[in-house]
Length: 236
Image (cartoon, rainbow, N blue to C red; front, side, top):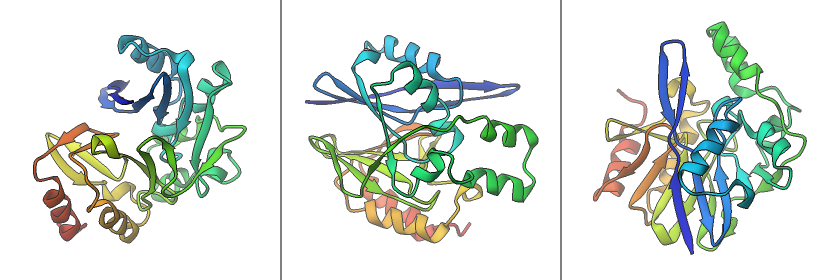
C-alpha cells in the first residue's frame, strides 16, 4: 500500500523566508524520499519525519529530481549518517551529483553575475561518492514511476504515483497562491524542453500535483490548466 507525505520545510536566510516541499513515499514500511532540501537540512528533515510519525531507519532510497542546491543540498549529509540509504537520479544528472562535472546552476549563476551569496550556497553543496541511475518509465515500487521531464535542467525527473493520481513535479511546475504555473524562466535551462515535458505529462491521469515550490495543488480541471500553461508557454 502506497502512502504520501508532503513535507513543509522552512528555509530562512536574512530577510528571505519560504517553504520547500520534499515528498516521502511509504511503500508498506519502506520509505522513499524525493529530494533533500538545502545544505545542512538533515536535522530539519529528521524533525519533519518525527512530526509525521515516519522512522528514518525505514528510509531506503532518496531520489533526486536534479542536482540544484535546494534539492540535493543535504544528500551527502544524509547518506553519511544513514549509509544504507541508496541515492538515485537520472543518468544525465549523475556526473553533477558526483561532482565530476561543474554544477549547471553554478555555471549559469557565474555567467549572469548572480549574487555572491547565491553562488557560495551552490558551491557549498557536498557531492555524493556514489549514485544509482533511474530510467524513464522505471517502476520504483508498485504504481510509482519515474518520468523524465527535462527543461528546468538536463535529466530532470518527476515521479508519477498512478494509484493516487498524483505527480511529484520537482521544479517543472510551481504553485503560488493556489495558481499552478510553469517553472520560472530565469531558472529554466531549456525552455523548449520544458514545454515538451509538460506535453509529456498532460495526458496522465492526475488529480494532484506536488510542487517542490508551493506544495500540493489540486483542481477538478487539472488537465485543462496544464493545456493552458502549455499554450501560453513563456509568452507573457
